[in-house]
Length: 118
Image (cartoon, rainbow, N blue to C red; front, side, top):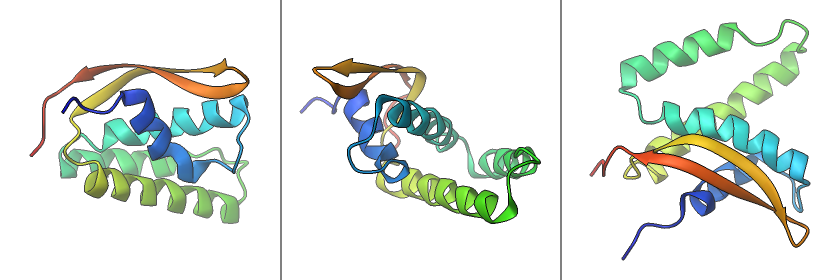
């Protein structure tokens, strides 16, 4: 059985970052963040945690602390989900573009396959 289309997988993966019936802009924003987290999940644990620590310290200073904390909580849960539910998928996202098809936001994803991680 061939693997699912990467666009479908990434859309499913970023779903927790979007409201119901998201706009194209909301899908674009969610996919942008999800792509970073998706690819981060491919790194070895030590490198992944080092990158995560750096990312936490580079949040915009104007972001209110409660919003920053919630944003990081959501991204961390997404990373945990990548490592558990999608661990076997070795594809890395190279580029992700949101397009509208019949009024519905869709993703077009360019990726490269790093192989199965089973």
